[in-house]
Length: 253
Picture 1 (cartoon, rainbow, N blue to C red):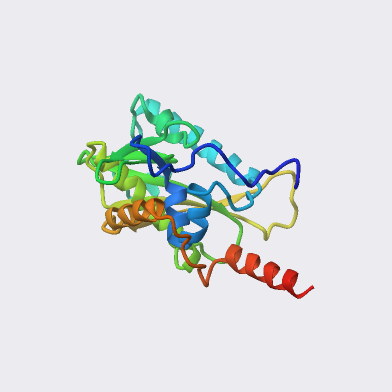
Picture 2 (tube, rainbow, N blue to C red):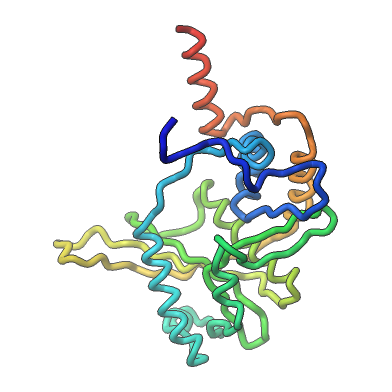
């Protein structure tokens, strides 16, 4: 086994006998939707999928966007992106903004009492419009030819991410707009030279969230965690299919 990765975890594992709230992140909710089997292996049995490598360039874009919007947050002014798209809003100033952004520690949380699941998530940004509604904002970075959009099936996870954040802020007592925005940065690859800089086209993509699926999903997650039966393999799960293929090959040797 690699010295850099231990697939068996001992912390953050669900104990059916415990009455303590169990923390469930936005990303783990999405894992359950994609593959209940992988979710169960992770949260109940402590065996995680191999970790992905960090996208340092995306992280750099996120950091710079946050700094840029924070300048306008402090001044209570609209960012030029907002003005260009006719969005009547300013970055929301709140003492907890840095806490809400930090998914590795607190993030924004809500205890779903019916399931005793403590739902958490780290939002990229929050704006507020003239009607006092919060607007949930998510930053995305890519580099592709043509216009960026949200039409691909794999981007459904982006939409669920937005909806969970909207749900969390509502559960924390805030008035939240149904429409959030993706600040989508698309790196230009058609320049004649690199010149030690990467330029981006930035597009604000509105998305009207629908949070109606969340309550049922949390109940399904709790039922899954309480079960002593490993869920069936998901036909569309790359990890499950890989494990099955390895197992089949190993048996044939």
